[in-house]
Amino acid sequence: MKDFSFAKVKMWVKQELVLTIALLLGCVSSFFNTPHLYYIDWDVLCVLWALMVVVAGLKTVKFLDWTAVELLNCCKTYKQVIVALVGLTFVSSMFVTNDVALLTFVPLALVIGRTIKMDMPQVIILQTLAANLGSMFTPPGNPQNLFLYAHYNYSALGFFKVMLFPTVLSVIYIGVIIYLKRNKELQLDLPALAKPDRKLTTIYLVLLALNVGAVLHLLDKYIALVITAVVVLAVNRKLVKEVDYSLLLTFIGFFVFIGNISHTDLVSYLRDHILGSTEGTYFAALISSQFISNVPAAMLLAGLTREADALLLGVNIGGLGTLIASMASVISYKLFAAEHPYQAGSYLRMFLFYNFLGLVLIGAVTYFVCVVNYIDYLDVSVFREMTEYLHF
Image (tube, rainbow, N blue to C red; front, side, top):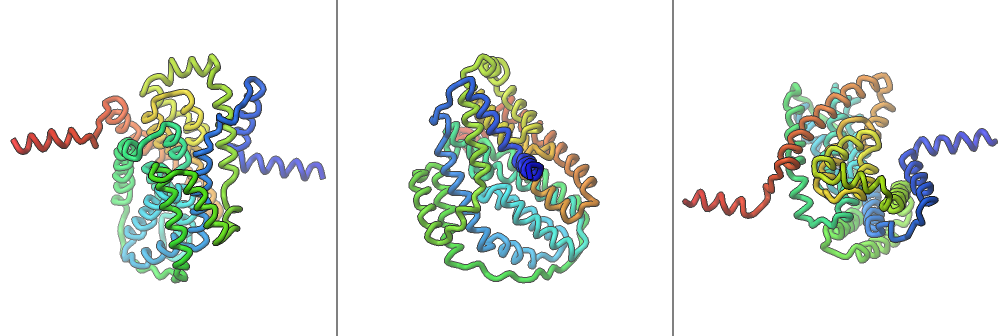
């Protein structure tokens, strides 16, 4: 019985490794410094909970699945199918997070792969790239964006100005890969899904818009939280159980750890000598994301640097690279490996190739344009000068 219990604990730790590390760091650091409740950013936790419960509602009505099937059945060529699968993942990840986008559209791609001949490893990898790169454009796109947006008190325009350039680069990068694929005619005939319940879908979409508005400071976060909680409890209280509470606990663990170490000599040294510069912060974010994943990297480094833009760029582009650089990548790998176990090795090799190529290309161009020689490409004065010049 003891062995069985130990095995269960071992399995849980393996499945929740990031959470385990966060809780250990929070607990151990509390022996050296008294933790305080104000270390925890309750605004971030409330917004994250509200978004997760609303997205869970959209999953239950299969709104994204129905939309995807309707669009894919209109595709006439192989490239159109890939563009649809990748495009849906890219756009949806901006609003429902990269994890949910992959959990929705990767299984759909695997189903299509059973009916037509497709390069499945490449398709799933492209979807993974799309989820990680598309989600970086908006604050609710992924957990690190949501945290950094609140931590540095970004304005909506300020955030989009920082992330627009690498997002455009990402579209170009993925677009070139798809363009180089061979094309062929085909006709998909996916089984039609029942239309989502109109009333429930409308409710969840309105709640999603409400909470995105709260993230963008258009509405008080706690008002949005109360409205969301009341409506969800009235419509489908089971959704409360679908929230990823391990992610919320992970945030709490890191909040406590960061608060505990924030005044140590080591942190002061890192803040002054490594993370005091834009370049240092950018590369620290890129590199640390490869080993501890970009969400923990964002939370740990945010307490050490004031270089918000460099950190935001670094942890998002740093989601490319290794399999654990973004935990969303692990999701798609597990889904693919479960269906094609004998291709898992070739998938990983191809994954690393496209990810590190993207990391080098997008990371380097972003570094020279946005970090070294910062260009405010949305500055109104730039357009004013251009207009005056053309008028002259």
